[in-house]
Image (cartoon, rainbow, N blue to C red):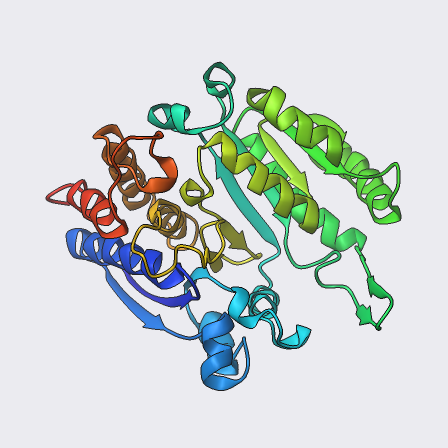
Length: 356
């Protein structure tokens, strides 16, 4: 297979984890006879420093052209004082909007060997297998913003069409799994959430009547994610709630460094990134966990390129490295030895099959 993949390392630990993910993609291409053109571009703070914009048009054009896009991370305290429209995070939002990547899919599956790394009781983690579907291009992050010396406003807006299209993704995923969807909102307070719940009830009843559908307020969902996580199958929610809940859910897996994500539109093109941020406190130290990025590469192969075998092989190599005891600092049990970013990448590459 020939494919163009945009590589956007970004800021902080982004370039470090991206390097390991690129190694894995190149190894897969070699073993299975694919030709991946990996074309790199600037995004976030790195782009702001070089080109005075966090989302250069050349980067957005590349993402539109590519078969899929991989992102490391954006942001950091270096850019805290820049105007809001130039913040590194605005570059990421513009990228998502340019790709119309409206559905963010985040799997949460705690690995058996990492249960000890989670602050949650191990018995609660057995059998946990969750997919969170987060609406990604609407809501308060994309609404109008106003700021004066003494007040500020962030507008949250959703339309029926925006809600229905992300509900459809969640319903299709639930059909392939346990047939269960939890829709999360704050309908006791917010008008956007009242619309969300009304649309969700109507949509699932009409389009997916066979599914078991639960509606939860976001605060209750946050509590139940920690007290009864294996009761969840597919969770679907709006942009900000999804951002917060998936960071919370990462603790089930032991670390944010373990979780991948895929942001999809109606086509097979997608934006793939680990859910962690740029982690400026450890950037440049070579200790970042590359697993989330590498697992995101596996999602890219599966969802955008249709290479399910290759994706499964990468996931097995990550699990194999964990089974062998390889741990970066974020997932090492207190007092236990850990390996650096490169050695974790080495273990995963070496765990790929010798021959296709």
